Amino acid sequence: DAAYDLSLQLPGQWMGDALIKLKGIRAGTVNTEFVLDDALLPRASLKGVVLDAEGHPLAFQLTLEGHSPLVLIVRNFMELDGAFEVPHLPAGDYEATFSADGFVSRRLELASPLRDDEVREIPEVLLEKQ
Image 1 (cartoon, rainbow, N blue to C red):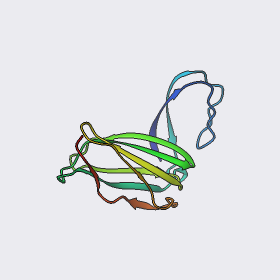
Image 2 (tube, rainbow, N blue to C red):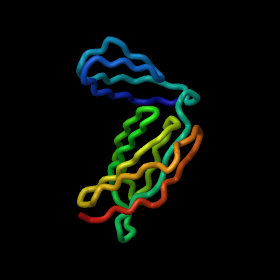
Image 3 (tube, rainbow, N blue to C red):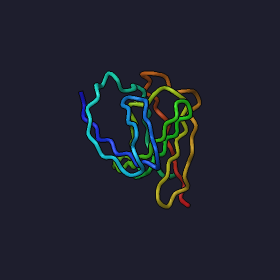
Protein backbone atom coordinates (compact mmCIF):
# COMPACT_ATOMS: atom_id res chain seq x y z
CA ASP A 1 0.00 0.00 0.00
CA ALA A 2 1.12 3.56 -0.63
CA ALA A 3 -0.12 6.93 0.64
CA TYR A 4 -1.14 9.61 -1.89
CA ASP A 5 -2.24 13.21 -1.49
CA LEU A 6 -5.21 14.32 -3.55
CA SER A 7 -5.92 17.99 -4.16
CA LEU A 8 -8.74 18.85 -6.56
CA GLN A 9 -9.64 22.28 -7.85
CA LEU A 10 -13.35 21.98 -8.51
CA PRO A 11 -14.95 24.38 -11.01
CA GLY A 12 -18.44 23.18 -10.13
CA GLN A 13 -20.28 19.90 -9.57
CA TRP A 14 -17.87 16.96 -10.08
CA MET A 15 -18.40 13.24 -9.90
CA GLY A 16 -15.46 10.86 -10.06
CA ASP A 17 -15.84 7.28 -11.18
CA ALA A 18 -12.27 5.99 -11.32
CA LEU A 19 -10.58 4.68 -8.18
CA ILE A 20 -12.72 6.69 -5.77
CA LYS A 21 -16.13 8.35 -6.02
CA LEU A 22 -16.87 11.87 -4.86
CA LYS A 23 -20.45 13.09 -5.17
CA GLY A 24 -22.27 16.30 -4.43
CA ILE A 25 -19.16 18.45 -4.04
CA ARG A 26 -19.56 22.18 -4.52
CA ALA A 27 -17.13 24.54 -6.21
CA GLY A 28 -14.00 25.08 -4.16
CA THR A 29 -10.98 23.08 -3.08
CA VAL A 30 -10.93 19.64 -1.51
CA ASN A 31 -7.82 18.40 0.28
CA THR A 32 -7.84 14.84 1.54
CA GLU A 33 -5.52 11.93 2.19
CA PHE A 34 -6.32 8.35 1.19
CA VAL A 35 -4.57 5.04 0.70
CA LEU A 36 -4.78 3.02 -2.52
CA ASP A 37 -3.68 -0.54 -3.04
CA ASP A 38 -0.87 -0.39 -5.62
CA ALA A 39 -2.58 -3.25 -7.46
CA LEU A 40 -5.39 -0.83 -8.41
CA LEU A 41 -3.09 1.74 -10.01
CA PRO A 42 -2.37 1.72 -13.75
CA ARG A 43 1.07 0.30 -14.52
CA ALA A 44 2.16 2.14 -17.69
CA SER A 45 4.70 4.97 -17.54
CA LEU A 46 6.60 7.45 -19.67
CA LYS A 47 10.19 8.49 -19.09
CA GLY A 48 12.98 10.35 -20.80
CA VAL A 49 15.29 13.34 -20.59
CA VAL A 50 14.95 17.01 -21.61
CA LEU A 51 18.01 18.94 -22.79
CA ASP A 52 18.80 22.27 -24.41
CA ALA A 53 20.25 22.35 -27.94
CA GLU A 54 23.80 22.14 -26.52
CA GLY A 55 22.96 18.97 -24.58
CA HIS A 56 22.64 20.54 -21.12
CA PRO A 57 19.82 19.23 -18.89
CA LEU A 58 16.91 21.55 -18.16
CA ALA A 59 14.37 22.09 -15.41
CA PHE A 60 11.04 22.00 -17.24
CA GLN A 61 7.29 21.55 -17.10
CA LEU A 62 5.60 18.56 -18.69
CA THR A 63 1.95 18.70 -19.67
CA LEU A 64 0.65 15.25 -20.55
CA GLU A 65 -2.73 15.02 -22.26
CA GLY A 66 -4.49 11.69 -22.73
CA HIS A 67 -7.29 11.44 -25.24
CA SER A 68 -8.59 7.95 -24.58
CA PRO A 69 -8.94 7.82 -21.61
CA LEU A 70 -9.18 11.52 -20.78
CA VAL A 71 -6.12 12.45 -18.67
CA LEU A 72 -4.39 15.76 -17.92
CA ILE A 73 -1.18 15.81 -15.90
CA VAL A 74 1.00 18.89 -15.37
CA ARG A 75 4.28 18.34 -13.51
CA ASN A 76 7.40 20.39 -12.91
CA PHE A 77 10.70 18.53 -13.06
CA MET A 78 13.70 20.10 -11.36
CA GLU A 79 16.15 17.17 -11.53
CA LEU A 80 19.73 18.18 -12.31
CA ASP A 81 20.01 15.57 -15.05
CA GLY A 82 16.83 16.65 -16.94
CA ALA A 83 15.29 13.21 -16.39
CA PHE A 84 11.58 12.60 -15.97
CA GLU A 85 9.25 9.70 -15.30
CA VAL A 86 5.47 9.76 -15.07
CA PRO A 87 4.23 6.50 -13.56
CA HIS A 88 0.73 5.07 -13.07
CA LEU A 89 -0.69 6.02 -16.46
CA PRO A 90 -3.67 4.20 -17.93
CA ALA A 91 -3.11 2.69 -21.37
CA GLY A 92 -4.10 5.04 -24.21
CA ASP A 93 -3.10 7.81 -26.60
CA TYR A 94 -1.05 10.73 -25.22
CA GLU A 95 0.47 14.05 -26.28
CA ALA A 96 3.28 15.59 -24.24
CA THR A 97 4.24 19.27 -24.17
CA PHE A 98 7.64 20.21 -22.74
CA SER A 99 8.14 23.83 -21.62
CA ALA A 100 11.04 25.67 -19.96
CA ASP A 101 11.64 29.36 -19.25
CA GLY A 102 13.46 31.01 -22.16
CA PHE A 103 12.88 28.06 -24.50
CA VAL A 104 10.38 27.24 -27.26
CA SER A 105 7.86 24.64 -26.08
CA ARG A 106 7.84 21.31 -27.88
CA ARG A 107 4.78 19.13 -28.35
CA LEU A 108 5.11 15.40 -29.08
CA GLU A 109 2.40 12.87 -29.86
CA LEU A 110 3.17 9.25 -29.02
CA ALA A 111 3.51 7.31 -32.27
CA SER A 112 1.42 4.46 -30.89
CA PRO A 113 -0.89 4.07 -27.89
CA LEU A 114 0.71 3.37 -24.52
CA ARG A 115 -0.03 -0.24 -23.52
CA ASP A 116 -0.84 -1.64 -20.07
CA ASP A 117 2.34 -2.30 -18.05
CA GLU A 118 4.50 -0.57 -20.71
CA VAL A 119 7.41 1.64 -19.73
CA ARG A 120 7.81 3.90 -22.78
CA GLU A 121 11.07 5.79 -23.10
CA ILE A 122 10.78 8.98 -25.15
CA PRO A 123 13.96 9.79 -27.12
CA GLU A 124 15.88 12.88 -25.92
CA VAL A 125 13.71 15.98 -26.05
CA LEU A 126 15.72 19.00 -27.22
CA LEU A 127 14.39 22.49 -26.55
CA GLU A 128 15.63 25.49 -28.55
CA LYS A 129 16.22 28.90 -26.96
CA GLN A 130 13.68 31.59 -27.81
